Image: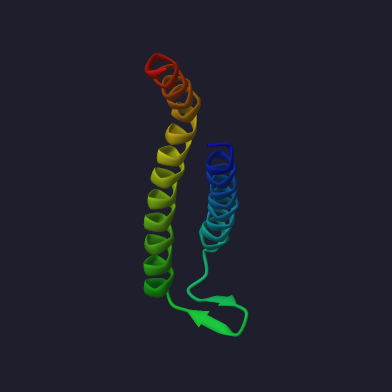
Length: 92
């Protein structure tokens, strides 16, 4: 059970870092009032920026849902472990 909890915590931390990266990327797009954006070697039109912002927004929403689900699972694992322990005691 402890290994499972550690795996979920690692996954949760990874998702939180990704969420932070996406939030930063989205804020980068939001800071521009120009017709075209130069990100690296690529130029983006208004439509491409809007499409990219929408895509990032959807990814953020999905990631937040996964974070919430993972956190809920982690929160309930100690309770489940205690229930399993009590069940084992009752069987003996």
